[in-house]
Image 1: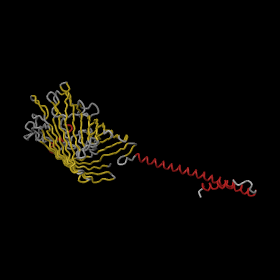
Image 2 (image 1 turned 90 degrees about the vertical axis):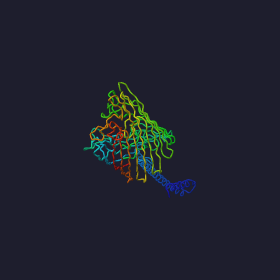
Image 3 (image 1 turned 180 degrees about the vertical axis):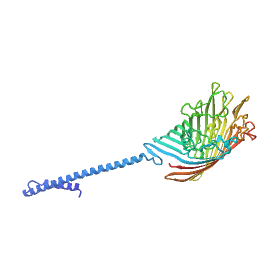
Image 4 (image 1 turned 135 degrees about the horizontal axis):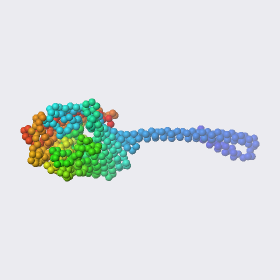
Length: 516
C-alpha cells in the first residue's frame, strides 16, 4: 500500500479514537491512550518517510531537468552547424555558409603555338610570318581549379542577404613561371553581395560579377548565368561577357518578367596606330594596378539595361549598352558615346534533354564584350576617337542524354569593321588597306594583320561518372577549331583574297573533383 494512503487511513483511525467519550472505563481509557501514542508515533514516522520521498522526487525532477538541459544544449550545438532542410553547408548563427569549387587536372594541345594556358587568346592566332605558326603546343595545368564560398542569411521571412566569393588560380604575377615551382597566384572571379526583397520582387547587387550583358539561363539574378560548358577558360567565340565591378538593381514581376539596370566599370580597348598628337588614351598604374598594363580614362561607367522573359517555355532577353570613351589629343579632351543592342534566347527542344540557345550583340565600341576581344575604337589623324562597328553571334546545342552525361556544340562569330584615313604617307585607323600585309605568309615577313572576324566551332562532353557522399568526379573532352580572318592590306595578304586567314585546332581534356 502506498505510504500516503496508509498515512491517511491511520490519521482517520486516530480521529475516531479521539472521539471516544471520557466516561469510558479507566482501564479501557488507558489502553486507548496507549494506542493513541503508538499510532501517533507511526504517524510521525510515516510523515518523515513522506518527507524523504518528497525530497527524492524533487531530486529526481531536478536530475531530469538537468538531463533535458544537456539534451537541449547538444541539440542547439548541432543546429548551429546544420543548415536548414534542403540546404547544404554549415550553419553559423543565422547564416548558412556553403563551400564550393573543384580541383582540375587539364591537358591542352594546339597545332599552332599560342603560349597560352587553359584560356585561348582567339585574336592572337599566329600567321605564317611568325615562327609560332610552325610549331605546336602542349601543356598540363591545374590552374583552373576553383574555390567558392556562399554565405546566405534570412533577414526575415521575405528578405535574404547573400555574399559570394569565387576565385581560381589563373593569375600570373611577375614571379609566375612554369619552370620549377609553378607558382601562379589566386585571382578574383566573382566577389559580391546581394539583398533580395522577395515580397517586392526587388534585388540589389554590388561587387564584381558577371556583367548584366551576359546571357542568363533564367531571370537576371547572379549565379544563373548561361556560361558555355567549355573546358576552355575563355569560353566560346560569340559569347558576350565581362566580369567587372558595378552596381545592379533588378525588379521581377512574379518571376516571369524581369527588368535590370546596372552601372559597371568601364574600360576601352583600341586598335590601329596611336597618332603622335594623342597626349593620353591610357595610363599605366599609379597605384595598386599592374604597372605593365594600360588602363583607359573613360568619362563614365558603362550603363546596361536589360529585360528578360521566362514564360514557362524557354528564356528570352533584350538589352542595351552605353559606353563613354575618352582620350586627350592636341591638348583637349575628346569624348565619344558608343554602345550596342543585344538579344538572346534559350529554347527547350526536348524538355530536360536538349536545348537550343542563340545570342548576339551589334553596335559600335562593343568589342570588349566579345570573347575574342576585338578593339572598341581606333583613332583619326587628329587624335579623335572612332568607335568601330562590330557584331557577335553565338549558337549552341546542349544535350543531356543521361543524368550523368552532358554534351555540347557551339558555333560563333565576332566581327569588327574597318575605319581608316590616309594623310599623305601616313595611314591611320583600323583595317587600313594601305597597311603592309605582304609578308603574312612568309616566315619573318611583315604582317600588320588587323582582325576582320573570328570564327569558331567547338564540341565537347562532360561525364559525371561518380556522385555520392564524397562529392562528384567528372571527366570532359573538347575539340575546337578557330579561323582568324584579317583585313586586306598592301598586296592583299600575299595574293590571297580579302586579307588572308589563319587557323588553329585545339584539343582539351579535363578531370575534375567536386568535393562539395
